Image (cartoon, rainbow, N blue to C red; front, side, top):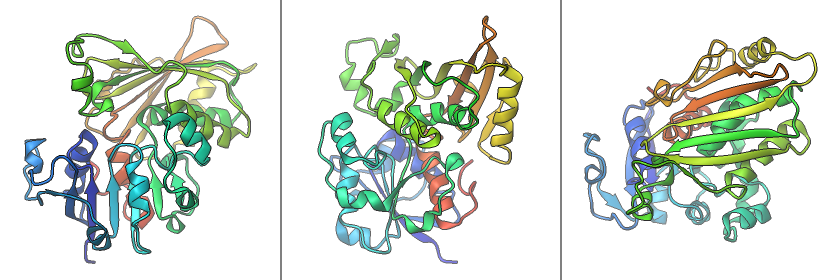
Length: 339
């Protein structure tokens, strides 16, 4: 079978670089165009010297380039994929790593992202795809919206417990810590002279835009509003996320029951691993992989548990999951290209 042509918009960012590293090893894909804005004319090796493959130079994205490719990946800032979506032809599939199509209500997008949606009519053609949780037929969707990195680490452990009505849902507490790559290359300018590499910073308390995504998906799987508190932190490491989730158990539910439900729910899911109880996780367990490792730990209180969830924000929380979604959308082997 001939290979499918791919265009990567936002190729020079951290997520774009990871996409390239995965797709060059994909047997069904040919990278035809690498696109950017301020980087036009440069080589991808100017941004990541570890990418040693022969690849096209950075060019501007145009409708004619889109027409030459079956698959468009967008790793551009919020708002840009909406513009691209209005240029798609009937043979294109857009796989978006930004927040542009994560929210089903366009007014929610305005509320949380502080900008008007530029492609409201395209929302119905999009699907929010966290692959291990989706049961939808994907071939009818032209736009695949990839989850945010924080929500990926949070929804994977929590959704099975909500669906099985094992936990109380009026006070879930989520403490997440991410490597600074999650903030993009611009983080170095934003934190200039602020000891980015030596300090831990809380941010987005109560107002982080991923709150909307987490709430939407929890409600979808439970048919009710879930009350949770989510606080993200930026850490002095390059990549990885560790989410610590504090949960109240329903009556007669215990740690072993939680572990057994998670293991049954994710049986056969290649990229999800449920660790032995009380396993202490490190981001080092997942760096460079498309895995999410989940550990259920006991609390000093019998009616509470503490869940640890670790992912690589650039892979399972970004480019790896995007390729996984592409594989599912086109009927490829789910693991194709993903080391």
